[in-house]
Image (cartoon, rainbow, N blue to C red; front, side, top):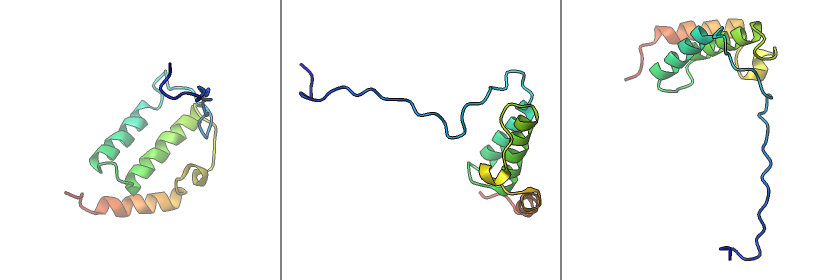
Length: 99
């Protein structure tokens, strides 16, 4: 006898990712950009730093250039355009890191 009489098991249907699936980088074409981004995130302890966003943008650009993901506008990916990203990253890199 089950613990909850009368309750039926409901089949859970998986939900696809918002942006769909994309190929893994088996050839390592964007590994360097990915590692730069991950190292940046480690240095800022996961905070949303502008210089890390610029590295994330470089990584996604590499993926788009190598057809590992569909091209999309930066605003749709939550990233600023070129001028805003570079200005924010240069301003952030001038600040000393938090302790």
